[in-house]
Length: 155
Ligand code: FES
Ligand code: FES
Image (cartoon, rainbow, N blue to C red; front, side, top):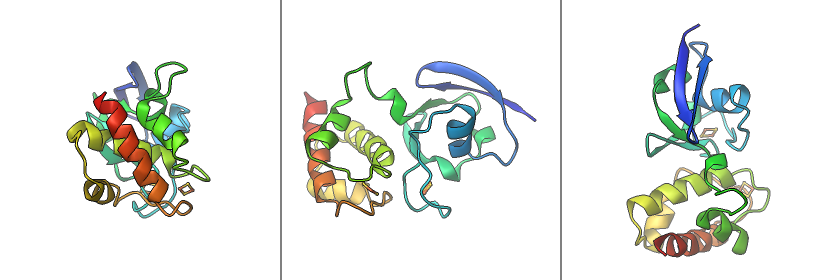
């Protein structure tokens, strides 16, 4: 099996991976970072979104071997110790979750959207979250959370 070396949430790791191993499986099962969720087998739900070299990807749609020598950030890498990332705090404040299954992907996508465009409109937020499905909330609280998170990230 080939080995890959990646930097995950700032820590370098080297692991052997099977040619068929998906990045989502690598993250969850080999790195034990189970905040990245797997909610479908059709690359539609967005629960598995992580940051790969600064861009969001659905980690269930990428093979682990493809990410050799990459920087990966997962939901576990957002908080600063006990201090939640402003986007995580905004989701908590606005009750932007119910079961929480979609939340890691929602938050990772939202953070990347704000980093790319700090002045998002509500339409931008709705468009940007198109690839993230929530089966519980009806989305309105998620939209409010992203607006507040964006404002907090702007400082
Ligand atoms: S698990 Fe990746 S999109 Fe659903
Ligand atoms: S909070 Fe349950 S799927 Fe989104």
